[in-house]
Amino acid sequence: MITRRNLLSLLSGAAFCPQLVFAANGADLAREPDSLKDKVASGTLPPMQARLPQTPRVITLDGPKLAPGRYGGTVRQLIGGQRDIRYMPIDSYSRLVGYDLNFNFVPDILKDFEVEEERVFTLHLRPGHRWSDGSPFTAEDFRYVFEDMFHNKELYRGGIPANLRVNGKEPVFEVLDALTLRYRWEDPNPDFLAEQASPVATRIMMPSAYLKQFHPRYQSPEKLKKLIEKNGVADWVALHQKMSRTVRPENPKLPSLDAWINTTKPPTTQFIFDRNPFYHRVDQNGLQLPYIDRFVLNVGTGDLIAAKTGTGESDLQFTNLNFDDYTFLKSAEKRYPIKVDLWKRIQGSRIALMPNLNCKDAVWRKLMRDVRVRRALSLAINREEVNKAVFFGLAQPAANSILPESPLFREQYRQAWASFDPDQANALLDEAGLTRQGRHGLRLLPDGRQALLTVETSGEGSFSSDVMELIGDHMRAVGIRLFVHFSHLELFRRRVKNGEAVMALGQGLDNGIPTADMSPRELAPTSDEQLQWPLWGLYTYSAGTDGHPPDMPEAKALLDLYYAWRHAVTLMERAAIWHQMLSLFTDQVFTIGIVNSDLQPVVRAKRLRNLPDRGLFGFDPTSYLGVYRPDTFWFEEETA
Image 1 (cartoon, rainbow, N blue to C red):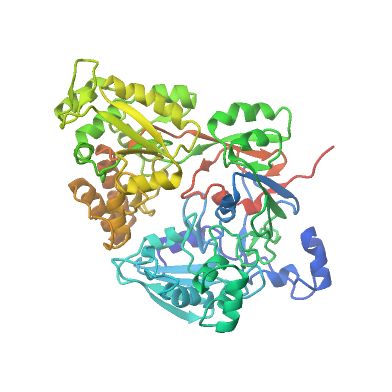
Image 2 (cartoon, rainbow, N blue to C red):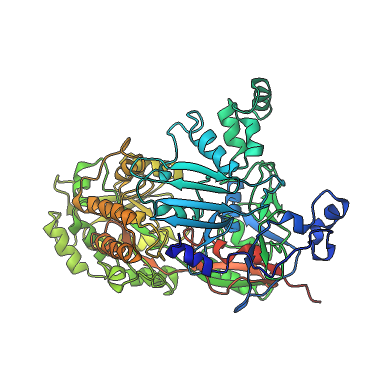
C-alpha cells in the first residue's frame, strides 16, 4: 500500500540507484579506503563490493557546498567526560528510518517500509546488510529484541517499553521472512516512525548473534557464570545490560550499524572510533561511506573546551560551547586553521521558567495553577533587556513556542503573554490575591507569607546566572523576590519530581521546528521529565501505574488533544490539532519562555568539507549534526 509517507520516501532518492553495479569478483584496491587496503589485500576483510548490502543507500552530494569527497583523515573532538561518547551514535545518525533535510521520513538502514492506516508497519531490510563484525543483519535481530529482551521479565520488568504501547496494548510482531518483519497495533501509532528517527531511538533490533552468549536461553549456566565473574557484575541481567549498551557505546566488541565504532574500553582519556567496514551507505560514485577514517575523542574538563578549541585542538566542535564563546573563537580564526560558524538553535526557548503545578506547597501550588499568576510572571520579564545583555541582541524575545522554520509557526504563539507590561502584571497579581505592602514593597501570599520564590536550577550553561540576575530585578519590580538554588542535575530533578521545587529553570521545547507529522507530546503531560507537571507526565508515561492524572481542565484538554492527534489519519487533521494545542499551551503560559532562535557556535577545521555554514542546531529532530550526515564530511588535501 502506497501511503503519503512511503511516497515521500520513494521521491527522496534514498532507494538503490540502478546504475551502480558492483563487480562480483576481485578487489579494486584503488577504490578502498587506505585504512582498509591491507586487510582487503590479505583477505582478512572482504572487498568493498562484498561488504556492502546488495542495495546500499545512495547519498547524492549535489548542491551548494556539497560535493563527493575523498577518503582519509582523523577528526579530533573534545568531550567534557567519558559519558559524552553518547554524542557519537547521535551524530552518526544511522536509523531504520531517518529524516532528510526537509524532515520527511526516508528509509535508511531499511531498504523500504510500508504503512497502513498508521497501525501496520512492514519493514524491509537490505539484502546482504551486515553488522560491523560481518555477521548478517536479519529479522532474527528484531525477533531477539522483541521476544528475548522485551518479554523477559528479568531484563524488562515492566514489559515492553511504554513508547511501543498504544492505549496500553503492545504490538503484534511478525517475521514474514529473513528480511521482512511487521509490527501491527490495534489502534494508530503515528509516533512509531518518528520514534525510530529520533536522536536516541528505542532499539527494536540488536546484534543477536553476539548478545545470545549473555542470555540464559542460549548460554550454559557454567559459561554464563564465568562471563559474569569476568565482567565484574552481579548477575546475567547486569551482564547483558552492560554488554548491550548502545546509547553510550562503551563495549568495543558490540557490533554496530553506525558509521564509526568505538574501539576503546573505558576508563580512558581518549576514545577512538574507527570506520565501520560494513556500513550501508555509498555516494553517487559508488564509494562506501564514511569518508573520514576515524574520530578521536579526547576527554577533558568541560570548562576548558572552548579555550582548547580556540587553539586548534579540535577539528569539529559544538559540545561545551556557548554563544558567549563566539568572540574568542572568532578571533582564533586568525591564528589557527579553524572556521567558526553560527547555527540557529531550535529550542522553543533557550531558557525558560517552569512553574511546578505539582509542587507540595499547597499555597504556591494554587497560585501556580492560577493562569493570572503565570501570565503576570511572564509579562513582568523584560525580554529585550535579556536579549541585549546576554545574547547581544541576536536572539528573538518569545514565549516558549515554535520557530518560523516550522510550517506550523504563527506569530501569535511567539507573542503570547511575552510583551513587557509590568502594569498589567501588577494588575493580574492583584486580582489573584497577592496583596502588596506599599507600591514598592513585597507582595504577600494568601497565608501571609512574603512572596519569596525559589527557582531551582542545575546551573547548566554559564549564561543562566546572568539571565536570572536580570529576571530577579524584573520580578522585584512587581513585588516578588526570586532566589536561585543550584544543585547537581540528579538532585535537581529529584527535587522537582518530589514536589519540593515551586519553580524550576530549564530550556523550552526540544523541537521548535515540528511538522504536523511529528508528535506534539511535549505540549501535553506525557513524561516525568517535564518540569512543569512531572506527576501528571509520570501518570501518562507509566500508563496509569504511577503519578497522578491531570486535575487541571486545561492540562487534561492538552492530553486529550494529544490522543486525538494519535488517532488522526490525515495531515490536515494533525495540523489542526497541533494548532489547537499550540494555542492552548501558549495562552495558558504553562512554561515561561524568554528568548529563542539564539545562535550556537560550530567550529570546524578549515579544510573539513560538506558542512553547511548555517544550520539548525538541537537535539530533536536534527540529532545535533546528524541530519547533515557527518559520514559525508571529508578533508581537502593540505596545501603548503
